[in-house]
Image (cartoon, rainbow, N blue to C red; front, side, top):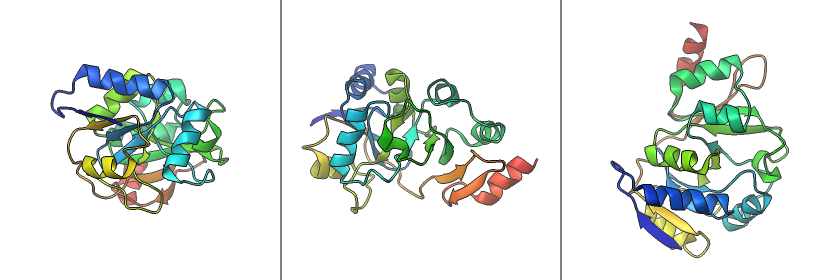
Length: 210
């Protein structure tokens, strides 16, 4: 594994481009997000998703979360958000709110895991968003750990546990950790809370009720 140190305040363009290149080639990249370190792969490549699931030891029946550069990238690559989804995105992105939306048929099978839905968010982390932008697509952001082991905010721990199986580690220092993202399903007639998290359901309902 190649480890590249990146300045959070002024990310080096070459490092971001290298990460994007690995992702487009079907590689695996460990990168920082606004919560923990994640594993990035191209969700439209079946070989990349299969490799990701193998490295994590994760069952194909469990869907993989995605992150994106912005709502426009999501609309272009995954499909338009519902009116409620657009309102939530405008208020809470970038940030720890994951929206479940219809999964396009172009996604590799292991991403939606047969559910017909995919979770996606725009993270409040410039490096993560910049890599999505450079790769010109949403990317996976499942936690950078073996299934059953604790997720980590420490790049040293990522290298220790996954170093032999990941192509590139983008090291911007420890991430802040904290509560995971809230997950809301916006595929139905009314938004539905799937997992409580960093954004309170009361705040979401209040915003939608305005």
